[in-house]
Length: 212
Image 1: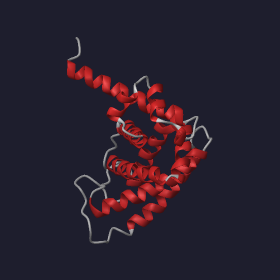
Image 2: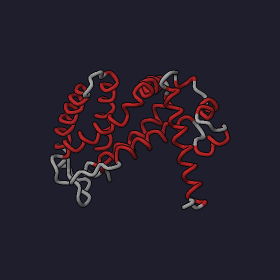
Image 3: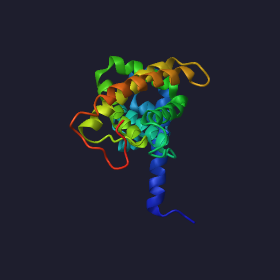
Image 4: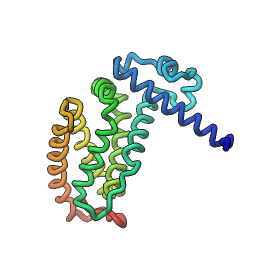
């Protein structure tokens, strides 16, 4: 059965979005991110610059698109039961799943992360994307990310993830054992800190979530 015009248009759009992100990551794996231009990314994706600009007006938008795609892949099929294990265990599982999804792009992420440390604009944009992503990771683990308490959780998990990301970039073990050890240690410290918030008067739990 032939696709309807709207479906065909969406399929073409999704294909272009995937091609742009893939091209950008492939180039970033080999070159400094600051040296890569939009026209070069468009050419590598098989698009004109005008076609690329429809969805990605800047390289920051491409990075944000990459993060959203990683979020989607991590969350697809990840449905832990709300009462299975502790919230820390579920957060460990979802973040390690994230590192697994990121593995093919390790070289590119390492170069972009190095650039972000020297470029405030990239750092700010990456921080905003990270804050959003950590909210999604919390929700996937059955932990509310809403309200003031949720905002504190997102910031805390972002710190855990960012620190572990540095360990992951240097981890050359086949089973990511160093990454797992680093993540577990950071989550345990964060859990102890989070427990001190339980007696604070602000925020309510969302139905079906935990107070980790």
